[in-house]
Each structure stands twice: as C-alpha cells, then as structure tokens.
Length: 255
Image (cartoon, rainbow, N blue to C red; front, top):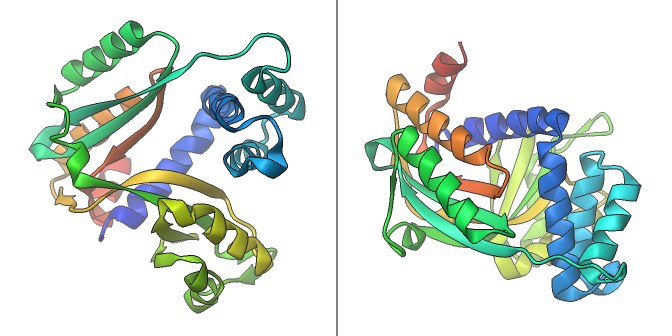
C-alpha cells in the first residue's frame, strides 16, 4: 500500500481546505440528515447518527446547524429530506478505477454533472459492476498519533482495537488508520474511546482490493485532477480510488 499513506494525508489536507469553503459542512449536514431519517433522531439509539454528529462537531460545524439537520432528517420540524444515494463507476488515466458516491435530491442533475466532470478531465464512465467489484466496504477509523502531547504507537492501537474487529492498522504519517469490516465500525470506534483515545473520523468507506501503481508524475497529476473535479461537485459525497501513488510522486506534484 505504498503511497496510500501519503495520499490519505493529502486528502485530509484537502478536507481542511474544503471546510474553509463551507463545502465540507454541507456534506456533513447531509450525512446527519440521512442518518436521522434512516434510524431516527435519537443519538443514543442510532449509532450512525451519533458518528455523523461527532464527525460534524470535530470539523467545527455549529451546534445549531447540527440540531436543525437532526430535526429535518428525523421529520421533527414538519419538513424532512428526500436524498437518494447513487454510485457512479469511472475509469481514469492508466486504468485507475474510481467509485463516486452521490447524495442528491435530483438524479438527473447529479448524473449530468458527474458525466461532464469525468469527460472533461480525461476519464470515462464505466459499466455498472465493472469498478465496484474492485472495492470492498470497510470500516475506517482515523486517530491522531499525538493525543494531548503523548505519542500513540501502533502496538497501543492494535491492543485497543484487535478484539473489536480491527483487521489492519496503517501508518498515515501523523495519524493511524484502523480498517475493519463495515459491521465492526461502531465496535472499533467504541474500543478506541474506551482506551482513552480520541478519533478524527469513523466512516464506512470503499477500500480497493487491488491497487494500481501510478509512478509517473504526469499521470498521477491527471488522476488527482480528475478526482478533485468530481469531488468538487455539490452532490458528490465521496470519491474512492484504487490508485497507488508513491510519496515521491506526490511530492513532485505538490512542488
């Protein structure tokens, strides 16, 4: 998984930039609304909503915005939301595969915008199933190595999460990534908290079962340009890729 670490860190930096623009806030609010609609507005009885709210709070989404999102999603304000989740499958440069997760109230708009972003940035739309078969749904928990001035090592993370279902722990530079089965996400997140550790995020993601090496800076730049163009769309919640870009190539792109 060489390169996965650096790219994951790069994505976190992009998330911070998105937060300043307010785009990340909109995504987090949507997640809260959907979770509240699916499992009810009670955080204690809806772990998906609990995680969505915690993630929003960690990104400094105002409490008033969070409360309104819970009420809208749970139908407590007489309104409600009607979002649909759609997955688009895409091929990028060098055969890199992308899974695009949309959360939208207008399927036609989402489809048109994704298709336009893909074709304008060197990608092609893939047949249903051709890309999704290359990914598995996994629980992914991210926690910082620096916990209130104390450095947390890999053995500590493993000891805390192994019995809860952790399958692997990956080094992301300044953070640890704990991967589990999607159904074990809540247990792993709870195990991290029970060990007295704080986590940055806890999400169900699509993790590539086979990564494609992209060792050329020009090609890697095209891949990242395509990912960014898709990710910038309002209806897009997540973009998952099987590109394996080495650290030194990412450094070249950043320079």
